[in-house]
Image (cartoon, rainbow, N blue to C red):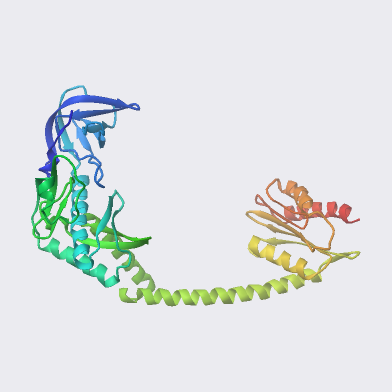
Length: 409
């Protein structure tokens, strides 16, 4: 049994009386069907209303495909009384009215200024989008459509709903021709601006939309997705961005129009600074490599380098670079290096012509640090452990060195 859909003729009523004519249970959840309702169900790209029936929350509203009945899904429990008082969450309802009405206005504005038709519409709690059938609109066309849409809002044009037959609809200047169907069509008319078939909730006049602001464009194959905000959402977006701009102007000590050029200049300076730092790091790396080479121990034809750095001297990436530089530029060379501090690291490496199984050395060394993290190959291996002081990391390297002695004999 179908419900009488009162929201078709009145989007502003938020409190009403009704009678339960059917109770439904599915997947442990309960729903009721009313003889009449102002609750809007999810349909046509617009989300459902929420609210209450008596003291029970209505968390979802859907349409039953079999017969078009409206299901009011309850948050908890059931409603045992047949007579109920329904109450719509007005904040959510009015937000949807603003966004959906704004969509009608913006879609017609794009049609008039750029001959771009709306082929998709999506409204959620976080965003509102329309898809246009033209992906190559120019910035000035976007601005023209946005300005026209806001002009229509400022003119506070009346918005009315009316019903027509399919035959009558074929003779009307509808923005989009709906598919042929039985019964009557509900049309939403914005006075002398837009006429389209729609079953959603809308404001009584365009002025209630407040403002339309296009936020983002996304080109997708043969269409253009336009994200926008209306009314309260547009105000919230402006408040957020205005706060960000004010904070940036304060931190950058510049005016709002100069933010972009200031940030661009700072990015260029940062890029140059990173280049200079990288150059200095390479110079320092060569110096450190030479210092380690000067303290190396010769064991026959093998050069062995062991050292422990503090974590405020080198990070793991720099340790790896240092180890690679030494072993790749020198033959018959083995490096057993470590970092001590809040976290401990070991980096064992050898040149391709040197003996030794670095992964085996790492395994025994990590046991000293109380960790089994890490791994590698015969040529290179690395691992990380818990916090350890210099002496502890040195003990781990000494253990590895003893095993190495057995490998190179």
